[in-house]
Image (tube, rainbow, N blue to C red; front, side, top):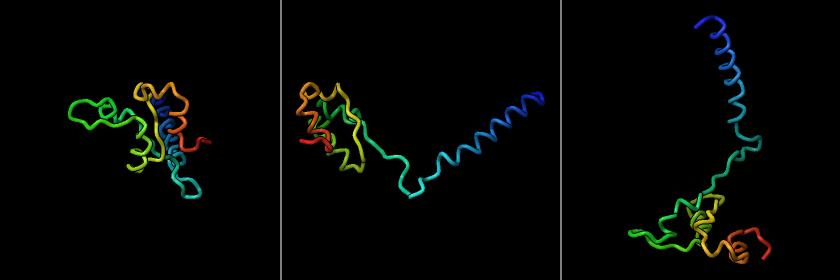
Length: 99
């Protein structure tokens, strides 16, 4: 490694180290910066009713995610099946929908 490469690498490392702590610092009001969500695919074996796993209704997913302490749900269109095509079913999945 020559001196020029060393200086370039060191400058990049110092720049990255100076920016990184501000990105990871909590918000000013001490609220968490990120909220955790759970992907529906986590329960794909239960939704599909695979052997050895208790069958679950895909519309129960938001309740299951909330019981586990997650603040949001990430749905999978494949797992929603026939519910994917019915707007009323999808409105039931959204707790903020005006129904």
